[in-house]
Image (cartoon, rainbow, N blue to C red; front, top):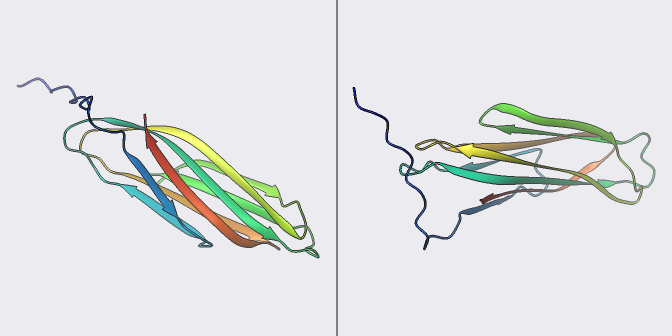
Length: 126
């Protein structure tokens, strides 16, 4: 039996990875960070969603759900504010990505009396 080799650290000359997905007004978007066969990585992930809130909307709300590799990380539903303008939700979390594994971050938006406006998913290697 051979011992497992430790992950290879990132060379000092390599820049940290940065991934971004602009989902626009989509209901669901997925950012996929490909696997790295040489090293484990850690990412700080930021998910931001905005919705338009019509002037005459009656009891509008929005809900954002964030999943990482199919596991729910966060779900939050709030009343939408700022009639005639926009409202939004954002969520940040960290994730270690083992050697040889990809990371899929999926953001979904639901709402009533609002219109999806923007969705942005960003991942910065730390």
